[in-house]
Length: 458
Ligand code: ADP
Ligand code: MG
Image (tube, rainbow, N blue to C red; front, side):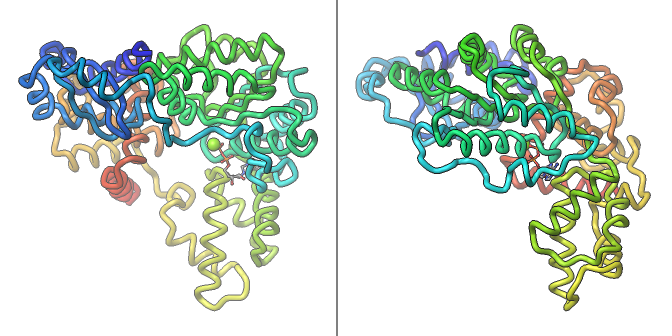
């Protein structure tokens, strides 16, 4: 299945176009080809030492970035063309060892309920902002495959998408005790498993991979946006999706944006998604926040003074549910550490006045200008260059971070941000996702961006 290594490498090349000049790409990068995966190392075939040495010297960082994103691998190395035959023989590429990558949950192999026991329908607070999606997920759980197929849930982070997928899993599990095969997978895990299964000549892995997904009665796919820029993964997913769909199996997909905004996803996939029920989940309104806060206090066993709940709900206006949980936890901890028996108004005021997350709600305004200034200062670049056309690395990175921060802090759509930079929507999506990935992978980047956020809100 050399084919698949090549396809994923193509996705890497697309990313590398952002960071490496076209001359560099043609002269060096396009001369190497992936040949194998050894543990966490991607092995390339290089024509000679001149090529491998130049690639290592000049392009290690961008290549690592691209392969860690697309292959989930952290290193690369070379096999020279002159040693190719020997290498293939020695590594007996037919008998690749099995991977230790994270695996998707399927109840075929596990006898215990694999779903998060806290993520149930009964722990899910229903308000005006999520009533419709709640009803749809319930209907699907009660009668999988008969209505709303596929069911596509979208909404921002921390609004309950994963919770609902698990709630469906929990419900079906309990009702059928393993009779119905449920497969839950994040699109990241799907990608990792796919890469492992399609290692060169690993035909057995391929068959198992396909079997596992295509045997599902119910397929739950979380965070589908992560496969948006991976053509090879999309293709496999498309076939899985089709097989299941045609067999009348239930498919539920969660995403951070609606199908039509998954612009890097192939048309044939987005139109399939859109053919079922597409339903959003929004930030909770005031009444829902009150109910959520009360429910969380009950579930966690916190002691809060009843009268502060509505006040808190008001102050947490811009918050998603995960952030609300974070604040409640902070309040509880603060009270305990400072000898209060109960979270009361005093504790609330004390904690909230110190909290960065509350910037917006206490009236500090984050503006576009503040973000641009902070970026230009930090990276020592000119404003014209930040918005200009040049694509050297010294500018691309600050530009991407700027796009990310505007998206995160300003509450304006990416399309508007893209316009500001005179670029198209997909570039803005790519920039934002790239920064999110980098922050996950590299604690230093995360710290730098946290520091920038500090500067922006003060
Ligand atoms: P998403 O997948 O949309 O990013 P999650 O499902 O992970 O969000 O939800 C974040 C947190 O908020 C979880 O702890 C979840 O239990 C909680 N949560 C989200 N929506 C609700 C709700 N309606 N009622 C109770 N808890 C919720
Ligand atoms: Mg989630």
